[in-house]
Length: 240
Ligand code: ADP
Ligand code: MG
Image (cartoon, rainbow, N blue to C red; front, top):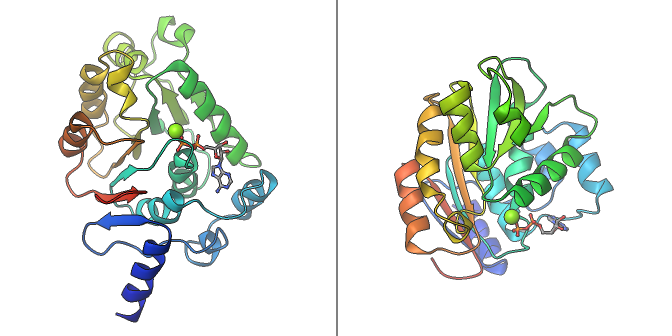
């Protein structure tokens, strides 16, 4: 109970609002990734190397939620560090490189965002052997993708949907699915219709889904409700 009170005080200080049952304690420092969650040294080294000294508010709360295998519905303003909030737990949960199918998928609304996220992911994974791949146009055009495999696949919704429909890409082993910049899925053209087929193709029953957004228009709320069932809601910067 003391801990619950301390967590509440800490969240208030950083303007973090949560809802859901048994929300894990927020991160006080990146070092807690190691002391609380057993993270490998390469990750802390890469965080330090890139000048990430302490977690941003969204990272403080979303990282422990995802590390506890809980679905996460996260909202924090643009520039508040949402990318790291899903990349850190993803790299930690995947632990090491594997040749066993596609293990994590990140959907970004535009190619530019997908490219940036891929770059950030490779930076953070440096020193590990993770296979991190951006779904390129050539790849979708290429032959059969049924044997395509990587640890983390980053794509726009349309390209991934084409890869599912025409090239039989296999997403049945995906353990983590992230919908990033969900509010832009609508802004940049109606991409929502491509989300559902991707979510369905990621048919692993123990998948952990999460959704990140800078704002919370109604369609984002609806999307979150339709793809997640027991998500912890983490909102930074305003009341939920
Ligand atoms: P968002 O997706 O919320 O708009 P980004 O994940 O793109 O934000 O991060 C915005 C910027 O903040 C990036 O340049 C990133 O490198 C930087 N950043 C992220 N996390 C931290 C941190 N913990 N400390 C310092 N800078 C950070
Ligand atoms: Mg972002």
